[in-house]
Amino acid sequence: MGATVAKLASSGHDVLLLDMTNGEPTPFGDPETRAKEAAAAAEILGVRRVNLGLPNRFVEHTIEARHQVAGVIREHQASILFIPYFEDAHPDHLAVTRICEDARFDAKLTKIDLPGAPIYPKWVIYYFCTHLRIVAQPTFLIDVTGFEDTKRRAIEAYHSQFVLPPRNRPIVQWLDGALRYFGSRIGTEAAEPFFTKEPLGLSGLGELVM
Image 1 (cartoon, rainbow, N blue to C red):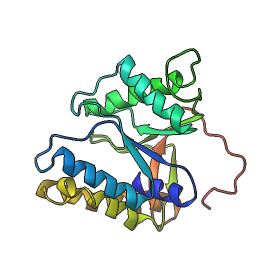
Image 2 (spheres, rainbow, N blue to C red):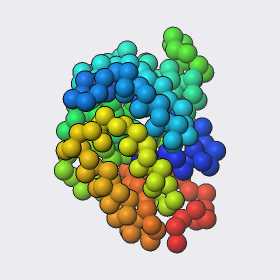
Image 3 (cartoon, helix red, strand yellow):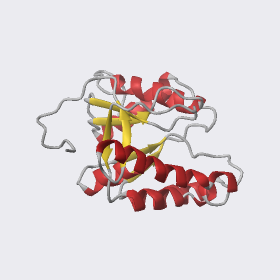
Image 4 (cartoon, rainbow, N blue to C red):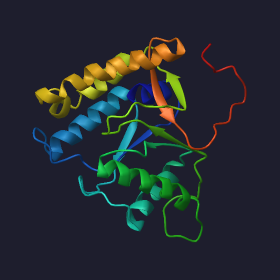
């Protein structure tokens, strides 16, 4: 959802990216390299980011992890959460989704030892980063025309992940293809797909792509 992140940031939204792990180990990376790449990508997207420091490949849905995320939600006063789609083959992704869903609830609790003021994010929106070969069936699409290059540059900022490994280079191409495909579904040049379990509220039809 990099193009959406860039679009939201450019519109004045206060977007915070929460990295759950440092992403290591990988064949071509190391913690220092990944940190520099993450910072470069955030600068390209125009957002802030923090890292929770959970162990990559060993993320677990625990009370402690829930409360760590809830603390970030409260400190940031997040009104919308974007989290990974809940059907996936990647155990870390599944754990992160559960952690964030429950952290949404934990963030509103009073009489609990967490930083920041209680808040209950109004919306939870799922983005598609699944390792299953499923065809996304989104609830809605966001027109991201004009932000395709920003997304591509942010992805390629992760040089050790999407440039150096030959097998990963095609990922950038098929992400470009996905932007065009989902854009064609709503009559725009590019779009990104999202899913919600709860109904979204519209104040009118003015923002609908016609």
